[in-house]
Image 1 (cartoon, helix red, strand yellow):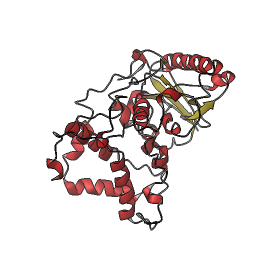
Image 2 (cartoon, rainbow, N blue to C red):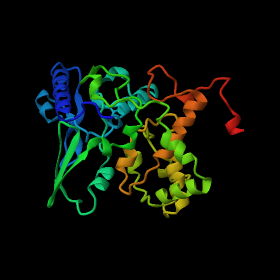
Image 3 (cartoon, rainbow, N blue to C red):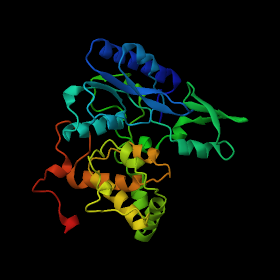
Image 4 (cartoon, one colour):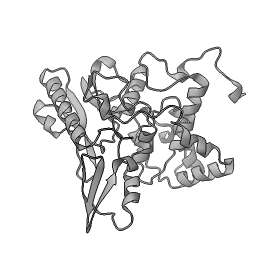
Length: 331
């Protein structure tokens, strides 16, 4: 459930973020601060790259701060300050232990997260005829008030949160140099025994039904690779789908080629995916493969006792082994 993460609380967090950013920039501890600013459309924020203390007034914090800003860190930018939610912090931990980001080069500004709004859920809650949104604002009682052409409607934020947020087990960043707000600003962590309830429900279906679901989802793919670009853990200099020699994936838009990409990407992020939802939000076709990635996350946890992104001293799960690791599932 939401705690106090509505307009008053988010305003406090935004104020604290501005203080931290201004201090880090003024003292020269960082060269750039990456946070969120108001977007050009309602229900949107945009990544903000600040280099001067005078710029910090642009920083905002609300339930629309959805981007995983860790995606920008592997590219050299000097010393960086970055705002992270719980899932973003876990992605950053993975980048650090995979040696894509130097811990000493980044100041981590954590925010206890109340979850982010899923705009597709919100659109469904608004109903037909309410597609054109002119303004949106959060209220102190955990409601987002949306107004458009001839309508104004209040929707509880809790009802339209991303599925990743509902199942989040670490709403407070596991690693941070600064914490902009107290733990009460975060959602209550989902108990681990409930985090995979939707995965278990889906697994109870027959294999043909499960395949049909994923085939329907993947068939809609337009091969834009926005999911790859939004993912902080898809950082290969050359993706396998871009290789021309040998050529792994065709451009004929066949279902089989689309499956090679999506299944390959899910397997490449096995033991690393932190369920931040960046790939689903970036997809213009609305493809949702979260259940598949979440099932692999569950398998890695059960087989190897590994939870991604929670320990800076951990070794990537597929970069090591133990003699007692189970092998019956691959024999």
